[in-house]
Image: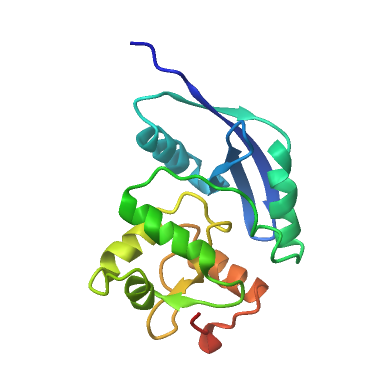
Length: 180
């Protein structure tokens, strides 16, 4: 049996909080974002979630305009990322959590426990946290908008400093976090 190689176009974007790489498929659907210091992790994620098909990352400038839209977000057009099509390859539970993440309005936050209640699984707080942490499309699927129940910033694959910057960029202040 011959497996078709999955090719993803990868572009680089310099942001105020580090170099961000974007991986999109040939239809312009965003499949992953990763900070420069996490490239090995995203390669592992893509290989794991799309196996047994081999995955190839090919450099491409602004695939289907995705890079320009993410750049616009970082430049202050906070809704530029809202309509970027995404596709993930997680478990059904992860997919549910990631869909809800996209519905969290810019400038608002939700706690892990509130997110668990929102998906109808109030006892699944830890699983929600794990799904949030496994999100392959940071920034665009805004896992940074999930905070601790006490309003504290907790967990973010890109680091707490990046999470704080993203929330402040969107107008959320750590101690005045609001739940949607």
